[in-house]
Image (tube, rainbow, N blue to C red; front, side):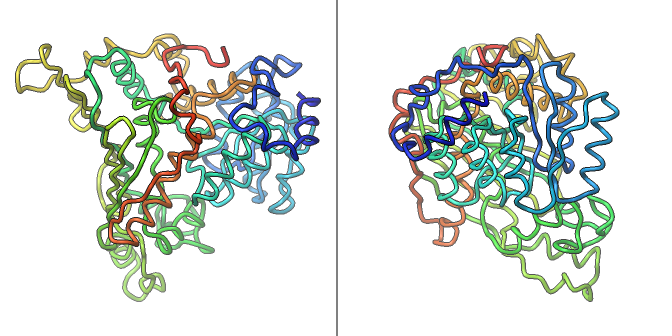
Length: 454
């Protein structure tokens, strides 16, 4: 691994010649010398420590380095590592650029990046340039330029990155993917998805606890309220699309025989966050004067090269129960998560929904059948177990992961494209083809296998 990393650093100037063919230089079957993956973590906040805990449950990992500019989070992570009986890792975080020293360490084969959004692309790019297999939390990029940065760096270095979208591994989602692959719904036509989640207590807190208790954000906030809420103040677009669109993209073979071609987006007025501040903090609170730009409900419509349409909804500023709003519809029937219902022509009673439970049991994904019990307790219903499993096994084998740089770019591009469309009264936006035409010949990922890196 170290010799490979040295080669990458020394050959960056010829990277343009590796476009979409990094395996011509770096064989897909090359592996690190050790049987264990030396894994580091940049960002050990709530999400980062969740990944850290799941990595420590595996026997094929060594936790070799952690990085965070918050000393309290470093102490929490070190305590978790110590209690797990693991060796103390190298510690970085003396300033905002110390992560570069972590990536330069010979003790790091792979890294998980779980920092605020604006750091995601630059850290993943730096990792790939250092020859470090990158695992990147959602969302990957905030601009089209950043999306291209991920793709271009992957192609120039031959280093892989995995986009850590956990909902792709949710049990019901993988069962429905299995149904799609077995043509239960017939030819696919239409999908709906989104991120519909009341985040008001995430976007505001009292500066003492991560969720709720007040209406502070920014410098006076804690955890995500410190940085995430500013996006709602300054931007009007779908800032968090991938939990919904990721699973749908897998079902629709996006970047692998299909692609997003164009999209439109519209937003309602912004009421929810201002009302929350008034209700919880009163009209005299300084944040009552803040004008939030992000519309409360943002609806995007995506067209695909093979003729399918996808509706993506972002709804995080209003009171509502959690829902990703999945609908998967083909010529023979459909699944809707809200209501947990399925209808298959010729199998279901005419014009009457089936409860989805028996269908999902019948088509339960092989990976869940094999590892479901082991995944219990890993976080988010067990799907975080499979995120870490696929990342570690792909990195150990040094092969392309289930969700790669092209996926990260295409799914994350919804954010800037939605902003542009909304700004221009719903004007259609062309989707960049991040594969540069190679989507036509790329084969769909084999989501049905239960081992990664093979």
